[in-house]
Image (cartoon, rainbow, N blue to C red; front, side, top):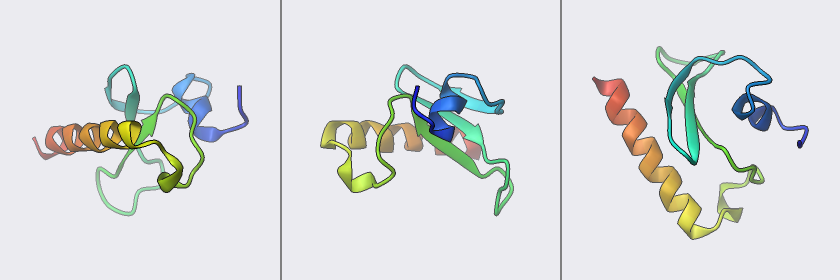
Length: 75
């Protein structure tokens, strides 16, 4: 296990309020939101924090997951 706060959230080692989940990502409410309902979409696979280092296939899956979460939150 990496010493990564997001990996620990995915593993359930750190409590969170889960909004949505699929096999590749989870969405949780931010504990220090700048606005009501601020949500983080986190990959279940560890990646460097630089989004431009993610391979294109995973990046597309991530954006599609974000789109699903936004639609859910708008309801």
